[in-house]
Length: 386
Image 1 (cartoon, helix red, strand yellow):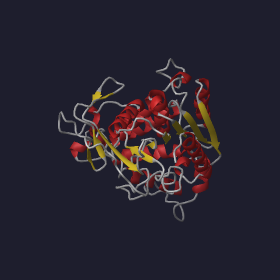
Image 2 (tube, helix red, strand yellow):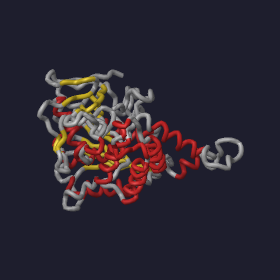
Image 3 (tube, rainbow, N blue to C red):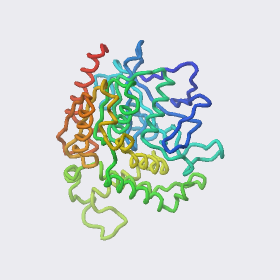
Image 4 (cartoon, rainbow, N blue to C red):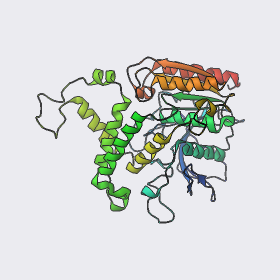
C-alpha cells in the first residue's frame, strides 16, 4: 500500500504533522481559542486530478491516525486494516484516504501533553475543554490546508461516527456521503457514568498530581489502566465475554487472594489496561471522554435532531449498527435514521447481527464489509469515480 502526503508547498510538515500557518487560530465551542495548532495525520493512496476521491476516516476514542499503517508504539497493524487496503472497501488505488489524530489526542495533534507556548511546559489541565464539533472544525482546517474542498465521504465508528454526524450538520456542502457506524447523536447517561468512573480512577491515582504528572516525571498508570479496563467491558457483549472466557480459571485452582487474577477474564482486562498505558496519555483520556459526554447534536438545533440535517439533503447517508452493541444501541442508530428521513435526507440502514458487541466494527464482520463495499461502489458510480 502506498502512503503519501500531498501538500501545498506553503505547508510546513514534520513527519506527518501539519503545523497550521502562523496566525491560524482554532475557535472552540467553549469560547476559548487554540494556537498554535498541529494536526498529525496519515494518508493512503493519491489525490486525483479533480480532488474528488478524498475520504476522511474519523477515529474512535482511543484510536489515532494510524488507521491502516503499523502503529509506531505498539508495532501492531492499523486499527482499520480490515477496511482500508487493496481490494478492501476503502481501496487506496481508488481513494485518497485521510485519517488525523483528533485535537486533544496524544499522537501528535495538539493536546494536553503539548507544550503551552506561554509557559514552555505541557498544557496539562490548562488545555481548554474541547468538543466533537471542535475536532471536526480542526479536520476542516486540515482539509483546507490540503486543498480539498469536498469529501467523497466521511466515515467512522463510535466517536468517529459522531464526528461524521457533526460533519453532516456543520459542513454538508463539503460532503457527498457519510457513513456512521455504531454511534449515536448524543451520549447517554449510562455512557457518561462509565466515563466518570474512568476519570475518577485516573484522578485518584497519586501519580496524577493534579494533571501535572509530566513535570513530576511520573504517570498515573494504575488509574489509566483501571479506566481502560472499565471502558473495555462496554466494548464487548455479555455473549462475547462468555464465549471467550466464561468462568475459566487462569491456572489450576484458586489463588485465595487478590494479587493474581483467578479468572481468564480478569487476566484479559489487566492486560488491556497495561497495554493501553504504553500508548495513551491520561489527560487526553479525560479531555476526549469529556468531549464525548458533551456531544448532543440536537441541542444546538432547538432540541430537534432532524434540524441538524436540514442542510444535508444532498448528502447520501449509510448508518450501520450491531445487534449486540449496548454502548451505542441499534435504537440510537434508528433515531439518527428517523431524523435523517424527517429532514428529507437519503439514508440506508443496516443492523448487523453479531454477538461481538460494540467493537465489532474493528473485527472481521463480512456483512459490514459487504455493506461498506456496496455503499461506496454505488456512490462512486453516481459521481463518476473510476
